[in-house]
Length: 305
Length: 305
Image (cartoon, rainbow over all chains, first blue to last red; front, side):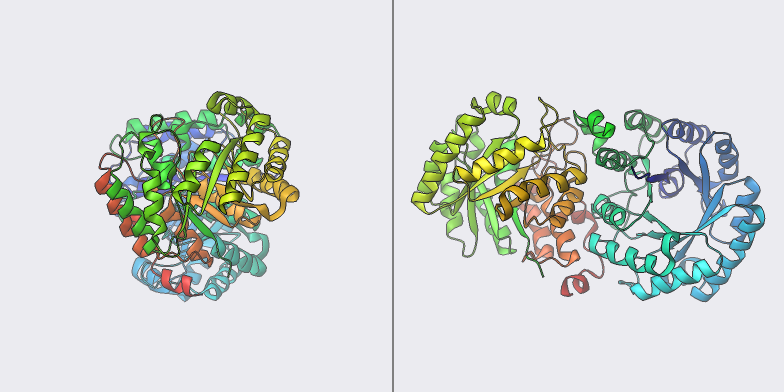
């Protein structure tokens, strides 16, 4: 039975995409409740300047809180070496840095071209190594970019190799724009793994065009072992073109558990955690189908097999 | 390039699941508009007693209308030999009959056990053969039943073989209850095809738990060549537990076209057909992500490959 790691990124990717700021106590309750369902890893926030993202201002405090939860892998997102230093100071188990495969997007977004980003990754790698923290690079816009359009597969493969050479211990492919289709997922995962092997573990998918779980399935077929997801698909808004929610954790757990993958997550318990989001963010839509439909009648038989 | 047939079942499965009756003229406009996008097959209605389903009372008239559209394969659902006679009289190219793999469900729903259903299929097969119409059997509740729970795979395989022996020319597996997971789809498609070969062409999936497109992908991997879908996922209501929409045609077409399958369907044109539904059924929710997000920037490049 293959173990698939579900990494809950809602407290970071979900919350940073919405206007309201979730109160610290609600974030703690959410993180604690998901961990109690068996979610093995939570990205609790990001170390960006609070002036840019006030939603993430309490990330250091959340890291300290989450480190008190036994068995939970506590990770955060960092945009650069400065953020990496703050992350290890707060005590993360690991951190990940986004690296945009669309150079135009990278320059516009963080004012660094690919060469400069590789040097930043090298600096972050040193910080991680000194602190004994795990360091992952997320190859963002890997499936296409809203500015450049198609991103050449060869670029992604080359930047994946360069990231590893610069000190990344693990890679993820991010469908930042919701452009991925299952055939492309298979091709790209295969090509990157041919270059860097098992260092590519993760897919970070958005459900912008409804293809999220199909893309996840395609990734699993190619050896992906970690999937990012967000409870209630928080942060996505299908009515605002271009906005895009993550995979919905609840539906992903249903799919994996029913298929016989081991996630360690108690789905029926997880479905109740949505109430924390609904209460703390009453105006935010929550997505997912399983929360409304419930598990199938023979769910317990399926997961017992 | 593999051709995948998308069979639009909204005018039947979508409309029969909602309360309002769509006016005949709107139905005609919908069917004509989808056919004009290249949709190759439409299930225009079902030949059930109008007293049971007033939404389907105009099916014969729709068959005659749709037969006037060049290149369109016009099919209808029939519950029994009486319906089959009406279908061929109206002039369908083909008809399909649902056959519930859960015997309890079959008895409660159509008051026939499996043996009686096989005899009904034999009678329908004769009617089809005499009229030169195509005859398909849809193995419903094939992935589980809300009354019985799990449905044994061996039952489905046995009933598939019995249906073919009784005169069915083609089979579909229907996830009536939205219970299917991708691993189960692979197992069941493989097992049934091992028994009846290419006669199993079709999956009829519901998106009840959000797994619809992932299940479709799993089916394609096992040789499925026809997928049923409903424009706007019409008929599904995620807020009514147990209710369940079909695959959303728009998202399915995006996935298949982007992957490099040939569907013959012009997606950008198809997205505009939703307006017919929105206008004729203003109180019915329409589903799907692609209609809100639009196609990806490099969509034309993808489908050109």
